[in-house]
Length: 541
Picture 1 (cartoon, rainbow, N blue to C red):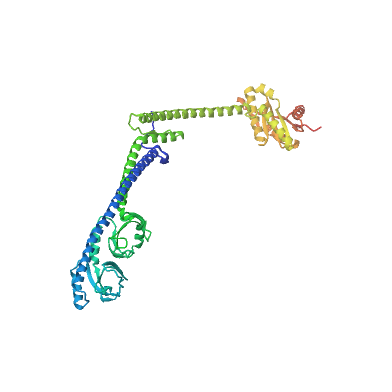
Picture 2 (cartoon, rainbow, N blue to C red):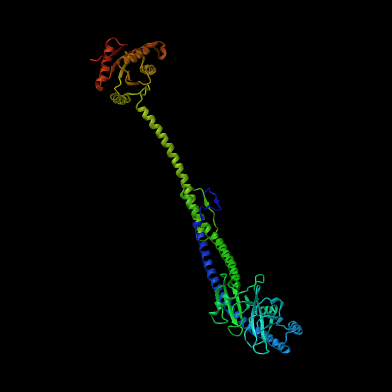
């Protein structure tokens, strides 16, 4: 039905506005929105669970630490009391006793003695420069001695010998053991566990950066003091970091405090990890669904896009194409085959129309040539091939109008063959016609290109000489007369030369068309009367 070949796929100038692009975008939007909602719900759920776990773990770690540390501190206090009962005299022997005690005691790594004025009697070498605050307390007291490198936790116990006390035992808690106790109790809290005094000086810490040990936690204690002891609170650290924290005093608010603290990012690191995993999973799901939608829409809507492109190209006049048949029996397959049949019929119709146009053009050309021939014949004398009487009258009208505008001279010559009737009767009409043709040829060769030569009728000819006055017209007439006279003619089988002469009447246009022609006609009659074979002009009156 059609000589066109199916094309596998039509070009798409812009897929952004296609149906498949819209469907893929819709699938992406729905998938993305669903994944976003599910991810938000999952993240909120995990965040809530983790927050609940932190709110359980932090207070539990504080309670465990307070109980375990309390037992450990009380054991150290009891051991120091037993030491006090052994000897109350600060001597060299007593210094050995203190050294042996520190070596055997789990809680302390060094013991020294200060007097009632706070001066060191048996100093601890590392604390020799630290000032020991002395008061009248009769019982043991935990405090922190301040050094340049931080605060050192110690137990102060008075040596009773008179009132007030004459001296005090100063036992330094073993920092490594204390840190190990805290580290054992903080497991699972994802934060740091710190032991501070009442004013926030850090005495021991577990879970912090040892390269830059923390020395002050007063800001955290102040933030947590507004809430219930042991409960989680959120606040900003001194560095502006968002943190979670909780604190408990060991016994009373003026005693040492346990502080558990973690940055928000560290505490909720599992949530951030889950967020990253969910993001990757969501991205994979979106890519899978978009790829699936692309394959489906390409297979389903590809033929529709081909039809759309085919219709667009057909609207531009490109009928030499056919859409690839999808090979299905659904509406798309039926539409594709119908489109191809329609394109084949359109192409055939276009071919028929082009052929009809070609034939019509050929006929129009032939008719145009015929009209031109007819037009030429209508103004041409059939015998002499000169212009005829009709064309002469039309040209005369045009030249008279031009003369009235330009006021240029215009002349007319009436030429008549002498004794032509007698020649015609003697030689025959065929020879007479041949003589007319020869005389017409002689005159056509004699007149100028700007002159109009026509057969006026019978053996009479007329010449319209433009831009020529009477004198010039007479000279032209004389030239014509002599050319005709001097040319012999041999006609029929007689081989006898025949000479022909002409009489010419000349007149110049002086503003009246009728008088213009009549003046030339009168001059022609006078030429005949004067013996023929002459030129006579119409002299102005």
